[in-house]
Image 1 (cartoon, rainbow, N blue to C red):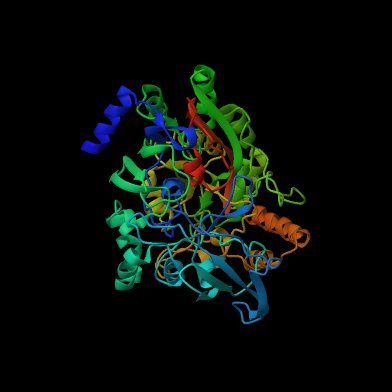
Image 2 (image 1 turned 60 degrees about the horizontal axis):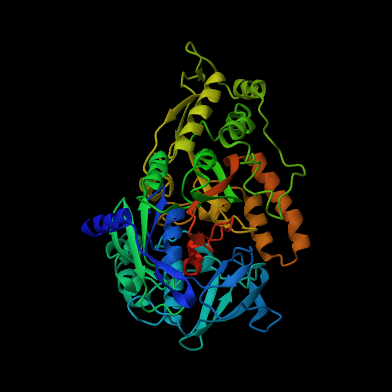
Length: 561
């Protein structure tokens, strides 16, 4: 607490600029405002955007997608391809024992990579990360991708070969494969793999510099409020412009804007900041004092449906929920039309998007009423529908507490649904509870509103494949929170991954979107645009429009005044 208070006082007084690398200028502290506090910083566990945002500054994985939407190395020296000889195929079998084609990919880690305690990053960290990821009790969010690695052949401390069960069209990339510090985390994991997600040092010893291999290390935390990052003394890449980064969580988005205007934060992260309607209004009042950047991207605002709920398991009810709502009016009136209505999770910005024979659900209250009548829900004495047993058509709708935009959308949805006889029960939670427990462990009863961020042409294995349904048996691994199961979808996801020819993948993607829109395991709302509010003196921050946050290039940010 004393440290955070001291930083606040320094910011209030103003900080002098000092010479930086190659003639650039530096500031001692950059304070960033975000709208949620991360539940767990372990990069292999959980799926909170704000955790990825913080770890973008402190953690480097093997490969990521760059701002140009193409894969690039982050800790490796080059991407393996069949053309350059660093990748080669071999006869293999798939999970069902059928003949398939596997791939061996060789990567070399950069020589100048170190954890924050000075320990070199080596292939041992890669092998350990694989051991964690593939363990059935570890509870990592993308377990199947680790389990499809048949073997890791260690050549030396820096070079290794990944042997994948099947080649996929993104094979040069390692996707979300995360490097973990074996020298710190292995004893914790081996002591009790099932409890690893709760006992990882990222949770119990967050300020240990050895957990981080990026330009910054997490130095101290005020749980629920802020994280302070210091420069990694063993970082050998470009020198960051800031000695210290303070990431402050302000979970009420109106208060987040007020914090910026009061000077207690320098910027609001676009990835997890204020909504576009707030940003538009802010720009009208403060354009002379700040940079405001609007970045459309692969950000899908939606409602996950608890398909175990007997009411919502009826497709007619799910269709009625969409037909009852004028989503276009919501985006026009609340977001100045800058956030297009979504048909599926595939954004029109992505090349695989299609409208061909994809079912849509335009605003049609009469259609919604007819569907509810057909499903056996008739108006009760107070206007709320009931079924033959007298059960009310009452649906829970949850989201992150304090997010002004989502809470407003909730109220609008509830009003639309009431008009057709559906009662809405709103109960929101702080993000760290909502994502850390309620959503990730499938404890929501009805609808869960939040956003998915994806990479370009992102195959939805972890969100739609039946193997990715979190449960106590798999220690809540996977992100298929609705509990969606469709063998046709499973087969299509696997077929898309295996197909290397984009021309042949395109019709598969079209069919996937058609199935998704027909089954409605998720209720689409709109595609979000991120709103970055930055100080005039900050440059070289480049929004990506996809799931990899701008902090992955934080060492390139510069002070220009």
